[in-house]
Image 1 (cartoon, rainbow, N blue to C red):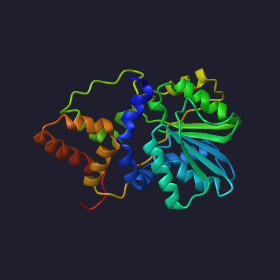
Image 2: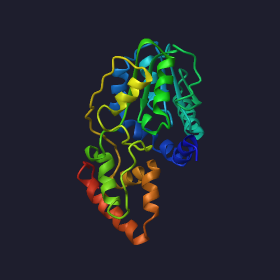
Image 3: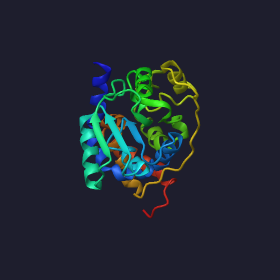
Image 4: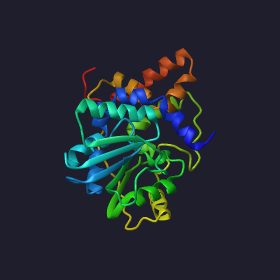
Length: 264
């Protein structure tokens, strides 16, 4: 299977769920969106590109930062994601956003077109990340900023680890290959920087953003949300017997409750 088709297959099935939970996901990852705005030096009247926008975030949030005289473009290789992003923009009445289907390593824009290029949790799943970063640099105006966000190690992220460590008790889960398309592909400090350097970027910087993920939902609903967001988790759960599924859910909810302030 071609890498591009693998990406499409992996994310097409998740698109309806990412649209369903779009507002909660926006809330949870708002600190990352704000960090991208700051590191990308995004401001009023700018033209910005959001790569791997999914169902429209962080592009839809960035639309407020650039204002009505600015413009935000979002691209994603999954047609269902782009359709969801367009629906969200229409519902919000935003006229300064545009969404298109495209892969990161073949951007449909001229050189020097954008004041900033950002991507939130996308580059880990690019089949050819060096080519993608090179393309993002091509469409970026000279002297402007490219800002990407990736996950740190899983064990440092309860959002992932609190469920994964429970499910992995029941499903054999060998570690991914070093360059597999995986959420933690660039967790190691400096690894993504090497990609940037190979692509021709200059004045590189890297920082660890520590933040709290907040979601105004019950633990039970968070469990459902995480399964629906992640094709990988859904695939593992599908391997279990009904009794195992019940026990995994029981243990997962117990693990999640330590992070909950809600009334159950």
